[in-house]
Amino acid sequence: MTKQKNKHGGDWASYEIEYGKEPLDFSMNVNPLGMSGCVKQAIAEAAQTAERYPDPECRKLRAAIAEAEGVTAEQVFCGAGAADIIYRLAKAIKPAEQQAEEPRLLVTAPTFSEYEEAFASEGWKVEQWLLSEETDFRIGEELPRAIEVIDREKDGGADVLFLCEPNNPTGIATDRALLEEILKACRQAGTLLVIDECFNGFLDDPEGHTMKGYLQDYDNLIILKAFTKIYGMAGVRLGYCLCAKAETAETLAQAGPPWNVSSLAQEAGLAALQDREHVQEGRSIVREERQWIKEELTGLGFAGVCGDANYILFRGQEDLEEQMRAQGILIRSCDNYEGLGDGWFRIAVRTHDENVQLVEALERTRETGI
Image 1 (tube, rainbow, N blue to C red):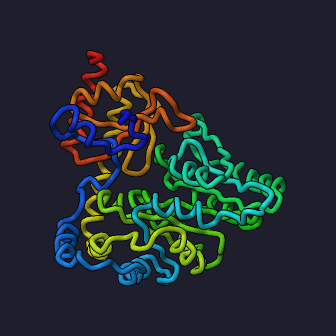
Image 2: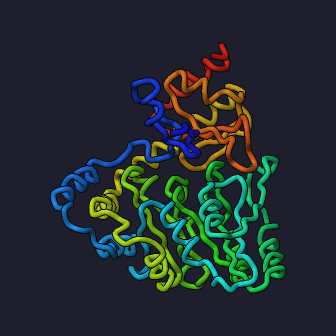
């Protein structure tokens, strides 16, 4: 099998194969405390009955999510991670084959690559809205007007806009007032707005930024979330979305195979929702450590330092990923992100002792070029 570079972070396995030991992984962005003890216990207990099929409708989990998010259970769809839902969306909302105009997806750039790849695989035309380093990679007021232009040019096609809030890999969040303008423009244009809030929990004010309160009044809104990040459950593969219309959740269920969420994942999700202390402790660590790392990076002379979530984007020497890997530390090269390229990197915010190891390793690369 031909060896291919992993397009995402978290590839600890290739490092272990090459070096025979576990790396310190700053390339994946999850709760610095990892998965809570009660979630691990729930998974172990669920394994005792794993010979049974899981509930294909995730009834208990959807009800618990609905209560936590302030929506109805009918508005919740659960998937095997956020990526599962993204690909289901691309398939579920594809127009009829007789549609003359090919559907359009609008994404910002740089942003998470799976939006584009999922929709392109279903025949969508992908258009990119480039973000600029000069404006700190922030979305501006021009975007709502661009949505209107796309609507005037299309011939009855179904258009979708994906926004990652906060964005990955920049860590930048858009002001909610501007998000509301974008949402209104999408409704007027007949455009579905999908907002990925998987990293929302790491912002200083998650409730002040989420758009879930608009689901009641805007039927063109879907909010994507996951247990991967704030609950540290990347290996469990559990995500969900909140839909303005219950019919959307039903359509997503039909867009892929049944039993997509294992019984172990469902029980893990139920346990995670109860462990608020674990979430708050992880958020507190990120809030303190994020600022410390940003100051250290700036002090070491790295450029473009930004991020308001649990990861930081910055610019350095092009071979920095390899230099850090040689020291047992994985960081995320962003050379495959549209709008970035060589010399851009993303690092997670972890515990202080781990962050000190990261900074010391970065300092050695600046001093010796190893």
